[in-house]
Length: 160
Figure 1 (cartoon, rainbow, N blue to C red):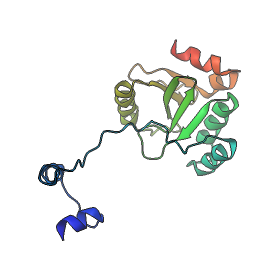
Figure 2 (figure 1 turned 90 degrees about the vertical axis):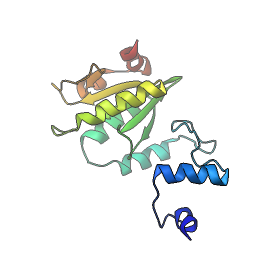
Figure 3 (figure 1 turned 120 degrees about the horizontal axis):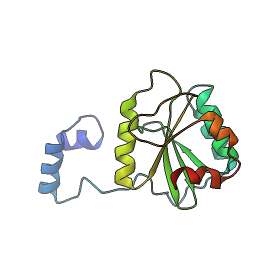
Figure 4 (figure 1 turned 45 degrees about the vertical axis):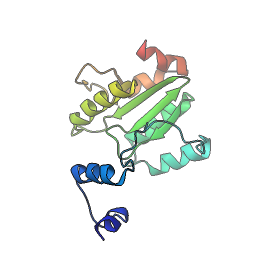
């Protein structure tokens, strides 16, 4: 019954119990994965981008940043349970983007994104309001700078 409850998500376990079950059952419970690897069925199209835009929390700043990046013809994915708000891709370059949309933004998210980006070999960018000082030596831009960008090349210059 206990294993059945674990399988159905009715009962929680600890990592120690999970590893013991893996050993006893001989079945891998922990499988390495790349959270950024695209699934074969994923297609990025304008309708999906519009759906992401509708799903973004907040009405102002997040939507504005999304539209500015979309205008640059960058591939954009919104993340709701990651320490960053968006992933931006252009050619082979992937960028985890923190969007500071208020004075109470948790700087721990920027640190967590920095650590994640380092492990996953990604770039990181913080987009903030005018005058925002980004901690932790992470590249940052304000919305005004994004508005002045005219091509994906302008965006990629931030990381070279």
